[in-house]
Length: 338
Image 1 (cartoon, rainbow, N blue to C red):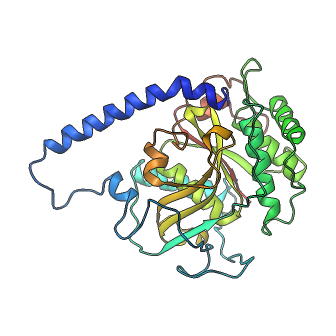
Image 2 (image 1 turned 90 degrees about the vertical axis):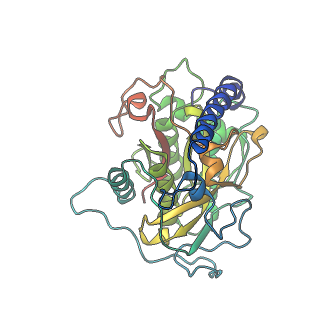
């Protein structure tokens, strides 16, 4: 990310607030213009964020691992056998093929699930996370370290080569590696999603070409959110999300959805909320339950918005993409694909 958390807060908070107030004014004017409720109106974002019978104001009291029955607590270490098969001969990861197909089919519109089951899952381990402080430019490095710790503390990825640590020296080693393997201008502070992805693969699995994590960009927030949930459900690894208009790194360790079980590969679910962590100490987000509405429209650090940075002009040798062309105006994640 090209700016640290504190700097981007000063720069963007006023603009986000004004934009949100403007949108709220438009919505109010539109509402006043309708004399009575429509009997067949499409489902709104508000209805999606707070479905009937679902409490979106607080974190669920018990976690239910995908693959188990809703409303039950599975035995420790249960891993569902179902996976999402890819298209024969295709090089596109199954997760991304599914999300892109959803995006194309709906043209960015919100898909409403007809299912009623609630599925909750969270990888969070309190031993795993460290704040990026005192280095306020190292959000991606602190996120990478915490994500790798989380994977190591779970039994879902025995192939990982990473040993859990909260060392600031290790964080700075990750940061230095990112700076050497990113597509961002050296004069910019921090790192970009390419550097973040490369560090996860190198420090976690011993090679920049490991391909366990990849970066992806979506032209709709709904497709991006479904990809986050699908990656968590299928691969049991945290998913990085780029917040603050591309200037900050956060990561998601869990979710709450209504509809089909995401671990089966189905995209027929509605995101109710996610469990979000932010490496910047002042944000005070560690495994914070964020509702769908807050993740999408919130004024605070939790908001997941499009990437608007323009300082990654170089071509990435791993995926062949030029960062700013790949990400600009889209919702960007760094997600596991195996």
